Image (cartoon, rainbow, N blue to C red; front, side, top):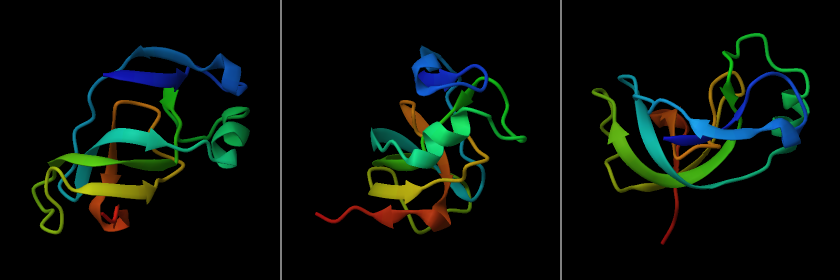
Length: 112
């Protein structure tokens, strides 16, 4: 998949587009096909100095909207095709990518 990544701490203009592995959802997670992502001030402010738990390159993007593409084995409340949005975890890879993984319990349904 394509992702906009930060190779090391830096300003937003240091983000680069590159191929990245498709994330797999864990048992209580879903994989979301990203349709929209916000530029949260936390994203660009934290990018300047990084986060101790980040692996490099890192994918930013806390505020994500899209449709569920895959569900983990323990997820019963969501199914592929459901339209959702969420605010992610700063310590994990985010939504500046074609796909993102998130815990099922943080999702909210996008209304019709």
